[in-house]
Length: 78
Image (cartoon, rainbow, N blue to C red):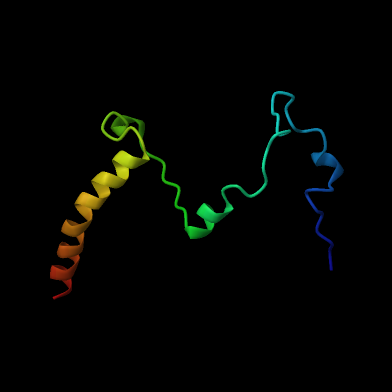
């Protein structure tokens, strides 16, 4: 049975942090509650970013479109 190396203690992973990264004021777990609620990451194609510049714009459009898609789904199942 092979023993897996721990990436936190693996010597080859030491000193790989860039000097410009400063986590001295970081707080552990500040986004954990939001992440636990559920998160999906979606990559938006650059050619539609003029229409959907941020997550709020995307969610607003999807909320408006969702009832139409749900209705189509119900009609196809009949």
